[in-house]
Image (tube, rainbow, N blue to C red; front, side, top):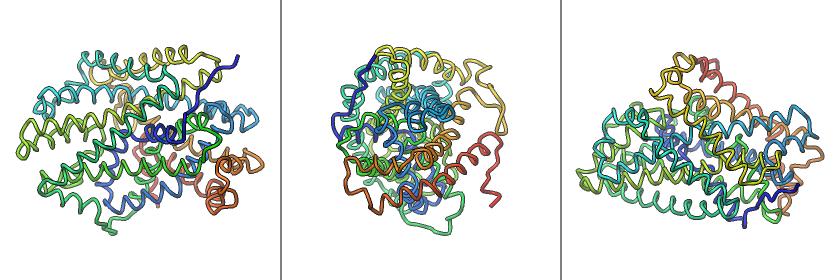
Amino acid sequence: MSIERGQFSSKLGFILAAAGSAVGLGNLVAFPVMASKNGGAVFLFVYVLFVALVCLPVMMAEIAMGRRTQRNPVGAFAALSDNHGGWRMAGKLAILTPFMIAVFYTIVTVWIIIYLLKALTGNLGELAQPETFGAVVGSPSLFVYFVILQVLVFAVLLSGVKNGIERQARILMPTLAVMLVGLIIFVMTLDNASAGIRYYLVPDFSQFDSTVVNAALNQAFFSLSLGMGIMITYGSYFSSSDSIPGSSRLVAIADTSVAFLAGLLILPAIFAFNPATNPEDLSSSSVGLIFTYLPQIFLSMQSAVGFVGASIVAAVFFALVLFAAFTSLVSILEIPISYMIDEWCFSRRKAVLTQAALVSFFAIFAAMSFGMSPFLTDFIPYGGGPKSFFDLLADTFSEVILPFVGFLACILCSYRWRNRGLSAELSVGDESYAGSLMEKYVDFSLRTFIPVVLLFVFLNSLAQKYFAFDLLSLL
């Protein structure tokens, strides 16, 4: 039975949808935190280098895999390896990973909804209290917002590729950009904002070390949604008349631009209200910065714009983060849905409803990992202490598995995809690619240093998360 898979209506639709999948909490919060703790402009420089030299070739390869095979990650890995069982398992790992990421990402998005509503209803003072986050994540009332979020997310997915995923990206991504720029303009008018700008943009090369390199590579790879099957799946919806290299560059530029602008928003805001801020005092956790530190910063703005003005700024920021989280969540969930449509011959409706049930089941346990269930709160010990079920999912699938899947994709494209199939596919829709310097670089890099880099990132993430040991300390 042939199932209609859908296709993006245009190159712009693909770019906005792919950028929507990449732009998320990592861009808006994790990037500014990592930049602040790793040398500011030095981190930016290394980050951009990794995006251009490592992440872009991997993105192009993943999109090419999807368009060539017109399949989900499992089908793509199987088709390009002549249906080798081991590679098919690698594809299944690329399905399991986004599914598990969607589980904990759903819960974080619910928290964002609650904070947005509190900011809109004049409760910014409550949000700035350190104990508020614990009360929010431990309250059974969050399941009301959980249901609302699930209905909205799966309604988009039920509408299909063009009418669902692409349409919401065409609306939310430009809205996100306008809101972000508007907030930046506002923050730039505040006293002492220049202190944050200097810290963020004026390089201090004495801070360059191996830690900066590792942090920049991790952030760049994760930020662009590589290794989780999104680009493979979206590539299968990509028209053969459009250029993969050109579109990949635009997606990378869009994603990096949002991350850069997020830093230009958050760091000046922090320094504007506390010029003596020490970057080491900032939480290394995106969750900690969003839900604990930033509400205090927004509340402090009332001295300049009043309580109502501060509440509006906070509400706009949480709406911005919500849009980014929503577009990422939709993209992540499309991967297992595509798998069910391709491999199990499910209709889109059946695949979407099945995923809704499965994600909801696991997400309930993840939500209960913050005090509602002692068993799930202290689920497993590793990395120097007890970890919750939520922690296990986030650490394993968001930070450890992604570079490993990216490594496998590089090996498949370089050594199993015979007769220079990758270059031939990248030339479809882009006649200038064949014989270009870009072709030579992509072919060389995917066969040599990129797999080595990704394998090291995987091993180092494994050592850090589970054994609290940094392999870079051996260098």
